[in-house]
Length: 397
Image (cartoon, rainbow, N blue to C red; front, side):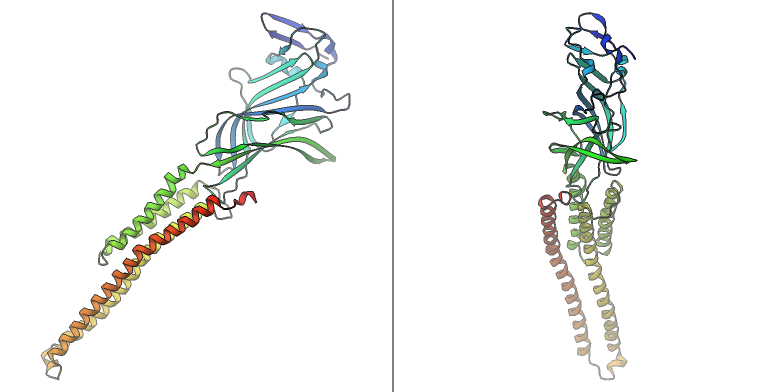
């Protein structure tokens, strides 16, 4: 058995030996001998959220974990007039603390610069206040159906590791259970205040054991401003650029082909860059719908010219044959067989008229495309934004 030596600093340094605590054992819960659970009140103060990683599906944050409980064995009302004892770092190991842990934690560490960032205060009636600073990386299963207009609900679970609910019970602080500092995130903001709840978890270790646990959920809304500037606006401009080919003359083959291929490759490259920063999921995301639609529009613009060009080439091939026949008909040998010059002139006029007809048809297709493509793209935009911004969110199903 050890005697708890408390070193405090108020106006002077003094030592106080709590001799009545000779039987105190930091390995035993406060009310264990009385066969009742120790109520531990918790508060979580979030200092910062450092990153939210879609690829790893996790959330990194810094927080103060504050725990309060009553340990009757540390009551010193009859021994001293001090209202509060502030324990030195070296003495904290001599006081019982809950075996709190985070079940959905992937990585965590304490802060020890310049000293371990933790404090333990004991009030006269035996109330213990214990606070530690932690850096946590927590699992956050994200639903990316509406990415990048998505909302994410990231849970934080707090539980006892070894003490069952017969020995330790967790409760949230009645006021300000979860506090958030002036946290600023580059891609997210808090949609509403964190929700808190209480839970229990049952495991089988030979026999069933039930452990107390608490949970809070961070409701995060993605800030779409970055994606508007980096994804949506550039892709809209690329689609509009593909429509420039409708104003270029049909015979300007290199210009129209180059423009069409360039816009297709640009949209494809942009889509590949976005996919590289996201996990491979089995469902279609909003950004996939957008990129696919933009690719369809620019590719269709390229196909429109391909169709016109194929039709024009067919006509030119047919016209070449008819021109050859006309030349042959103009030959004196052919004329001697009864073919008149007037007949040759009629054939030439027919060929010229047909050429004009094909050019008009190609230009008509271009004129229709000038209106059809923008109207179709506008309808797609209206449907896309209404659905993904205001329709029911899959993740809340």
